[in-house]
Image 1 (cartoon, protein in one colour):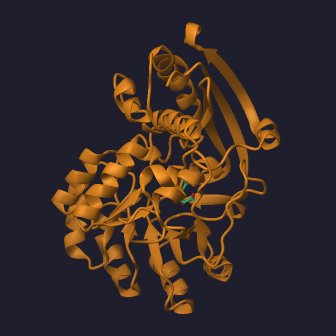
Image 2 (tube, protein in one colour):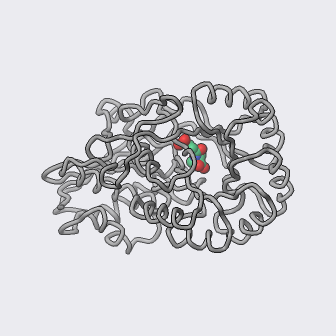
Length: 371
Ligand code: NPG
């Protein structure tokens, strides 16, 4: 497949309500979209880097620059490219997993559309629905938190994840657990804790949590392994898992019993499927994370989560959780589940009016002048 034209779109999507985590408050979702054109089809990819480098090192403005200067030129000078080649093609550029994943996704979407195939078909996904979980930010007020959980339960979500940080953990979890004794519940520290907080995690063992996610810094495998030996709640890793190699190391060393898989964080869908296969082979728990994707990225996550190695509900909320108007046709929760898209390609396209309303900047390059 030859990519004739590549476009970048930087988009700002207002969030319905601010979302607070241990590292700050998100008010809007800044993201970069990659659009590629062949002579047969157009494909879309979503770069899930946030507006600021606070979840990981990538951020939207930086991703736009890396895509513009380095990744798009590599793509436009390749004589022939398939999604499976994208990893190798872009390997000379270090890191930039989320920017690379967006290119892989766009190429894959264009290829599947050329052949009239769906992503579900290409991945061998036979599930028709996936279970939806929801993430609830730090409210700073226990009554507001319990209300937010009640709303999520009423909306049908099958599992709730609470964001925690030092000072907002045991009491918050206790309050939720008292009101919802049977709720599938888990917590996420986004790396805000250190080994000096082991007592907090030991205290959380009392609340029958599905897992504790990423308590410590992303590069601290040994601390996670030490914690896993001291508590009964399974330890799950998110930010730490950036590749098949890091997933293998984390599992091998006993740093996690559960993996949160996000295609963007691991450089794309091909690597995500390899990590899925590893977790399945090693009987490691697995669920699909979320990055406030628009319907484009969410479509990929929902299909991925239909693979058989996924053992727990993902952060796969309906579009209305975050957006008044999603970029694509919305994802709608039905009985706590989302329908796996089966349309051509990734199964969603941007709605032109929303794209033009939310676009901050865009640029286009053709094959002959790819810089
Ligand atoms: O449902 O898409 C979603 C959001 C899920 O809370 C969610 N993601 O650390 O996994 C996370 C977290 C997050 C990512 C929060 C990025 C803020 C920014």
